[in-house]
Image (cartoon, rainbow, N blue to C red; front, side):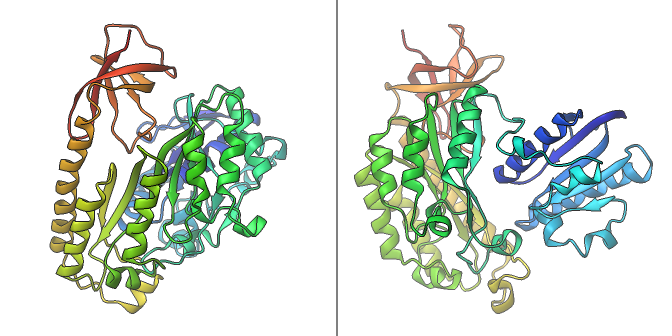
Length: 432
């Protein structure tokens, strides 16, 4: 193991990733070398940033802690520290269950890691971070927490109530990131729709987007995780008018049946959901909507699921994921409903949703063949350059596979003629 080398293992969502990147910047400023290798740790210190959202993510976090706990027990690493959502949620139980860890931290007190390593947090670096993404794109976290309290969701238990970051801080952070070569920003939050209400007593997402889009060097701003209730409609005007605000929005609708929406405490009706989708598409022609759907919630009947299937066919989402209900302790659903839908039924419903979506995605992709689209290049593979359009967020959305008859540069934009389409990915070549 290498002295003064720290291995940060990041698990979970992009919001966790931002925390790891901020911690990395602070550690590097103290003279540490920071690496990210869960398979072959080289550092004398390992920090695991955990996820505690759903069953599979919690299991991955626990298994990772156990894996490195064994290395700590055998003195193959000197210190093992655990932070993040799972650690914060089970801060009392974990030290007893896995005592090999030197210390557990919550999601918001990771700055204490610096203190425990004999250093102090440097506020002058508060808006800086060491990127783990390709240097041309980044995740920009504009708030933490959530005030919605959906019946099935543990996020408010883990992260607490919504806390917006000041617009001025976000502007300063974006300017610094642009100076580092970043061109594309995934604007993320647990609930974008609520942004600004706690700080400014009004919804401020549209104003934030306008001010960020005015910053020279910002090529793309893309919105992730809006909430359908109390949707900030002025965002649509900004998206329509600003070329560097992608015509893309991620809204987790979760369901369409009024029966299930009520049980989920979603504060929105089926009628309001359809009207919201219609308005988004009317005000922003060509917009791509990404959503996630949840099936198998307690009380979901076959008729409820049929309504959900019809929703998929009618809404024709350009991007969609579907998940089965997972009971999370401490949530309203866990305490007041019986998880009575068999696993096999839940999985069969997910499969049916995704099968319908596959056909929709294929048809939407076919409509792009013959068009020239602005594409950013993410990486080079043996047979293709791989890029994305404004309608594609990193890691979760389709990609454009570009023939290598011309030399393209990573992180640059090019006009690409779309020559072919599959269910999810596109094929293209450089437009002369």
